[in-house]
Amino acid sequence: MNDFFGMSKTDDEGDWLSVSDLMAGLMVIFLFIAVVFIRPLQEQNNELELQKEQLEEQKRQLEEQKQSIAQIALTWQDTETKIFDKLVEEFKTDLPLWNAEIEKETLLIRFNAPEVLFSEGQSNIRAKFREILSDFFPRYVEVLSEFRPAIEEIRIEGHTSSEWSSASPEQAYYNNMALSQARTREVLSFALTLPDVAEERDWLQSLLTANGLSSSRLVLDEFGLEDPSLSRRVEFRVRTKARSEIVKILEEVQ
Image (cartoon, rainbow, N blue to C red; front, side):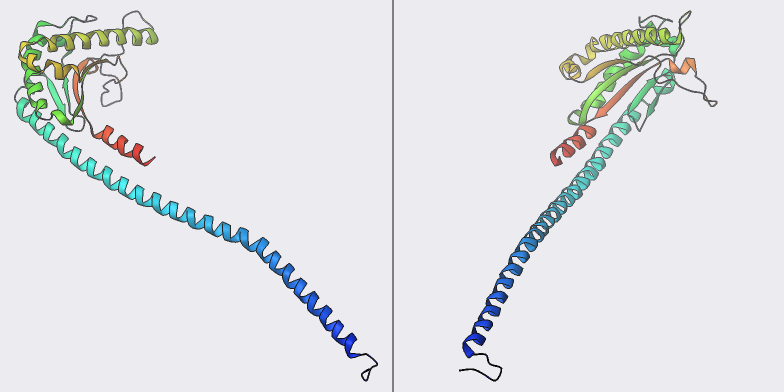
């Protein structure tokens, strides 16, 4: 049977079926395109979420690290203050007599009189400095032994001026390096053989070091020029475990 325009119902239905098939095919294509483009976007979103979570975790760890370091700094600052106070209490009347001084920031005791310490260009300890060391070192060890768990190193440091007769600046530095090292070894050897520290010798040998520094840390006057006399000195420096504890925390986070 033909309709008004001369087309049969069968043909009309066939055309509609073709359009439906075409639409279905297009839907499949659009769906495929959507899957192709949306899946990477979803993966990117998932990756961004993961990165966000990782950043949040790192932020949390850094905050914990910051708090731990701050706590260590406060704890060790308190410990170092106590060490300083004990040293000042022990030696406050002796330091002026020995021409010596103590620094709070570095826990350093400095002996400043070169004419008392060694003969010029020699490493042998003068009699007066032996007398001072015999009095100073046992009392020094007694104070530090109260803070035994907190101490990482006790350094004996030797310093010279930059001067050396008839030598170039480079050779003077090398000569003074050898001299400062020899002098600190002499001080260490003398100090460790004092009878009054015999009971602490094993502990001291695990901590005590001799460090010759030549003219690398000169003392300058108010005009920025070297003061040769003050540059020649011997220092006893205490290092606590604060730095190593902080490094340990940093390593745990990495």
